[in-house]
Image (cartoon, rainbow, N blue to C red; front, top):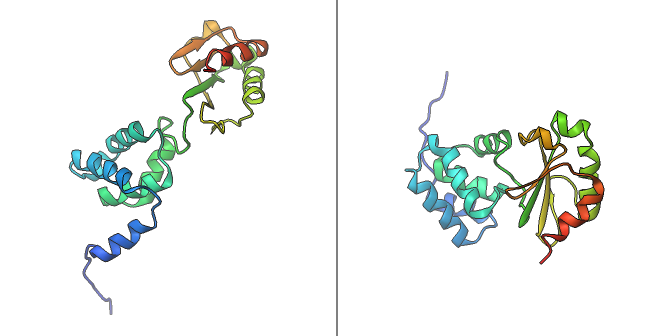
Length: 177
């Protein structure tokens, strides 16, 4: 014999307890709630909500993903799946000056890996991470679309072409206040 039951939404106490595990300020939680509400708290708007939230916070750590999932009434695993699938979304904070090194074919064969190593050594940071002072983050991407300038790096919206490892210290110096 099969038992049936009814599904009910969580009580206020259950919701409060779940939210208590999240280490975000009440202010940040309210920002996320407001963004979700602006999209009608509709599960189908998850990408738009994530885009707006990342615009506010700069990245989407697990705590933020949990609040988004809660507000849209979807599983956290669905939110995580979206965040980890789309390269636009990031779970790591970006530095004030995000550095992206192109590792597309043209850049790679012209020495992008050596340029990447030079940035890694000069900043003492691993790919996908942010410097301790929050000034720089280092990432790679597949193609900038400037193959004629290979190897290429971008810092923010500025493109640096025909790079060599010896140019890296001068480029970093441009961003030191």
